[in-house]
Every structure is written in C-alpha cells, then in structure tokens.
Length: 456
Image 1 (cartoon, rainbow, N blue to C red):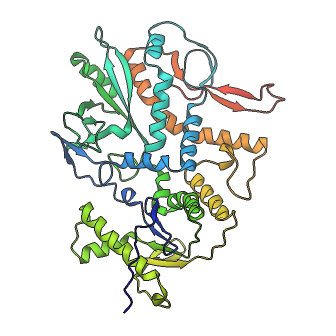
Image 2 (image 1 turned 90 degrees about the vertical axis):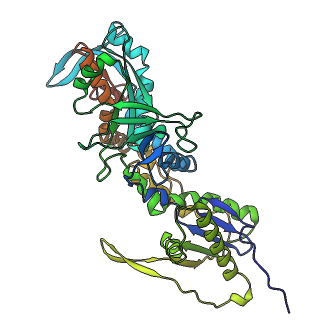
Image 3 (image 1 turned 180 degrees about the vertical axis):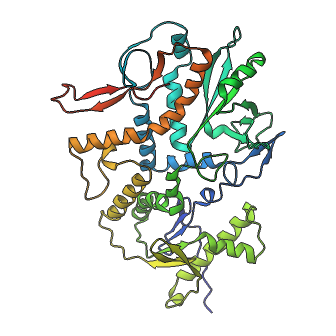
C-alpha cells in the first residue's frame, strides 16, 4: 500500500498579507485582508492604564495598520504625498495685507518683525502645517497642542501631535470629548512605565477662544481637534479612499508585482487562484465555537483550512473532484451580484515577461480615482497605454485639484485662526498659503502666478 503523501501547506510563502503562494501545488490563496477596515466603528471604550479610551479600529491600531499598508504600495504612497504637496502650495507665509478688492487680497508684504513674526518663527509654522496636512490626508484627523506663555496669558506655542499616537476619551452626556490621550505604545503596553499615556484637555472647537480665556489662569496645555466630516463616526473620521482596502483593489495592486516576482523566482506558473471571503471563516468559527478575538485559535483553524486546500488541489487522485461552497446575492445599483464564499479559478499562464501589465494599469487607475489623483499629474500611468497630458490639460487639472483640496487646508489652518483671535493679532496680519496659478506664457513670462486665497 502506497504511503499517503501530505502536502506541506507552508512550504510556500506569504506574498502579501492575505495572499499566499504555494509552489508545490502551483496555486495562490487569496484571503481578504481588510478586516481592520470593516469593523472600525465600535464605540465601546477600552482600558489603557488608568484611562478609558475609545479604540481606533477593532484592535485600536487602525492608524498603525494604515501606515503599514501605505509602506507596501508605491501608488498609495505617491498619491498621499501628491495630495499633501498640493495642499502645502508654496508654503505658509506671514503677511500684512496692504490692499483688498471685493474681499480679495490684491497687495501685501511679508512680515519680518513683531510678536506675530516671533510666534511664526518660534513654532516653525511651515513644518507644523506640513505635519497637520500629512495626518489630515492620511487619516482625516489631525491634532495640535497649544500652550500658554509662562509670563502672560497669550498662547506661546502650538505643536503637532501625531495621529498614530492619539486617541480620544469617551464623550460625556453632552456628546463632547473632553480628553485626548497620547501614547507611543498603543501596540505594546499603553499606560505602563515604558509607554506612559499623556492626558490633555480638549478645546471645544466651536467656542475655543472663550475656553482659552477660561483656562488661562491654570496655564494648562490644550488639544485642538481638526478633522474632515465623516458620517456616522463621532470619534475618528474615515477617509473615503479607505474603500480601496475593503473593495480589494489595494490587495490586487500589491499582489501583482510580488506575485510575479514569486513566480519568476520559483520558475513556476500559477494554475489556480483560490479566493476566500471573510464570511467563510466567520461561519467556521461560529459552528466550531471559536472566539474570533482569540488570535491563536483562529490562526490555528485558518492554517488547518489552508492545509485542506493544498491537499484538495494536489495529486491525480483529486482530478475532476467537485467542491461545494456557499454564496449569497448582494444588492447592487444595477441589480444583484454573486458573493461566493470560496472560488477556485484556473489560470492559464504563459510567462513571457509582460504578464499582468493590463492588471497593473487598471488597478493603478482605480486607486488614483479613489484618492482623487489624476495619474498623469504625478507620472506616466503604468501599463502599455501610458500617456502624458498636454500642457493645457495638465494645468487645468492641477488647478482643479488645488481648488478641491481647499477644505483640507481650511481645517488645518483653523487652530491658527483661533490663536490669532485669542492673542489679539493685528487684523491685517495673517498666515497665508500661496498657491501657484499656472498660466500661459503670453500672460506671464514665467508661466505662473501666485494666489493668497487660503489664510488664517
């Protein structure tokens, strides 16, 4: 009797999170990696040291997970940098308005002395704005901390507080958040001696000047919140572009180059791609009474299922076998679509060096679409049909992009407007972010002008 051969399910390797390549059976197993981006609205506080904290994501590590995913995808990283740089324009300047026409600034001069200039230089406002814009474009949340002058009641400093290290306390009965918690070890042991939690009072964004006056006697530090509106999320806003994680396009974008590298490195083709929906394992956990929050047991059960897939697809004895799987009909705008719990797709693969180029192109365009970036503005579109825009089209697209990003800039400038009003600055002195207005050479020899429409 021939000894039964067991296929080593883990002789392969992980291509990206949720995607495993098994050379022995020439198959790719694709599991959904968007779990952290589905259930990120749990409002139940968790204990961290002596504090009650509202978790950001199911494991309180959604910002960390986002940064990890950004680092693995060049398209997402480039888009975020582009959005940040468009918002930053020519960088913040401290100006004194000399003339206005119908509400628009027509003449100004840069301020180089005075208390306003001292504040601008001491706090490195260009760096502060860039930090705020980076977090706002990445997370739709940005945090700044104000501190009083020890010798007066003026606000002397404003500092950026990284969103990845920031969490909110629970709302009170009036639906107001009173405390901000800052810790560098949310993924370790928050609240311990090594990773202490700094608790700071939060300013009421709608009555900030009055509260600054109220807290002046105590000289306490205060956090000012900045965020983009996000329906149904009272604590942490959610950027619309996170849809690339839940839709699967992010996984697809990461998978193509690494899968191709794995195939070429192992000199093997891929005969099958196995797609597994999250509902498949949810059903298994429910039937076998496995707690989904128990990572050790869930990993063990998932590994067991991977082994079963490998054994199912290997060997001649398994030829012409059938597999029974569940599916459900999901309503869509055009009717309904099938959502299969398991799908095994045979792949016709003939490696010649140009595989998956079309996939790369379409995936890049969809990700750019979700992030509001025209791919031609940051470089040639990947793929066979790479094209660049003419000067006029690129100029108009860039100016449209600048206009669309003004809400993000406005939210990041809000804290400086509050300080200007509270500290009693000269009304004609303001912090502005000039933008390039690209034009034609017959109107301006340099091909560009400046605007000063966004200011504090």
